Image (tube, rainbow, N blue to C red; front, side, top):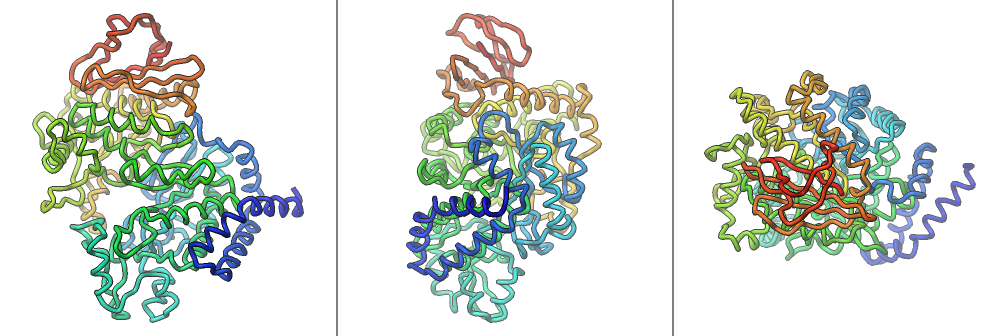
Length: 613
């Protein structure tokens, strides 16, 4: 397409959004037209810089706006250094990634951040430079090009709530530059910060207490919601929004297809509130969505909203005014591990009922674990109906999943343990939490079989849900915990590195041997992906509901589309259970390909069935 036609395309996109964009911007920033004109000019410059190949991808995706939905996508989450050392190393491993059936690749934070004060890459000192040990921005663009050639979309974290204290803006602020200080929250005394502390919860009460830190260079207090070296950005300053959106679009122009908006609920601060999920946050996200639709409409926004369902869903926006394309199904993830520990599906059923009741156009990322810990933000009002109290119940969950409970094979570790509140979160790989690590250490073949069966069943549950299933790198070959993090002084205090270990490539080489744990899980994951892609009943357009409760340890999910039906059954108990005691007729067991009669059919202990009629 020649330049004149591309110019017309940009003008058309901007015209579609101009009225709403201008209205929202001026409402938020008190009619600051100078800032708005700068913002619009920035959008045009970002569009001018967009490579031709990415513009063609934009055009294709505009013609098929639901390209990321359906039932053919599988994601993989990885740290570049842990997976392959460098971005060039990841390019060399793309055959493996394709072999895993992955067409959505989430690269964990890889932008420049100071060693020892990076929070795993979430303290960015330069949004336009890759961490030198991982490569360059050119390497990232080359990897994205290779991924696009293979039909793989690339996701990257955009850490928008804060910068590193080493960022250029922060360094200027430390040097006394007033305009740079206005990009953050600086106070001459503790009076206002202490007022904030009355209503704002602490994110890390034991390891990073409070929401403010003292900045000795200027003898002022600065807001640091997460860690003292992460300075919160002040989005009430329009230049912060302008420049951060510019940074986001720069990353899109390197070939990033999916922007993960990190900690998005935190980005607007209001004194006297909890500084979470403020209405202005949704205005900002809506404007970022429109910015992408003008400059790079092939790009998706993924919101990281690790909160209760009623706080998560609003980040989709509305049909008329959408915000995020994708959100994490975080409560389901936590509820699944709760069910593993309790063997009781009632909470999971309760939570899934809420998810299944949502409009079908909402697309979630489903996962068993991520780079972070598992937090027990469960519905304790619901659990209270069965006599469960929050503090002792959290202790039981953590005792079970760390292997302290009698009979438990799970091997996790606590994260951010707070004895005062009786609260702690959990870390561990899927395989280790299922008992694979313990069974291998004991040489117990029967225990290993049970652990691998559970591991596969949990993956089957993830693939049963509508949305995009995402594997954590290594889970596809049943990789266990990495205890070596204890010996690294930069990691030893953060137990999340237990499940962030380097990819075990020797183990991955065994993925073709079905007699090994690696081969058994890898073959199962591949089969689940294949079946899911082959059968339209897994499409997001399907009607999804729960089967009537028959047993507290049995979960039944029904998917229906165009006269086709799938019944997925999951048994969390130690005993086989009747599958469909109130049904007759025959089904195809998708796992075996055989026709089976409903009468007398049972779900093996710790396993699952996919039945299609």
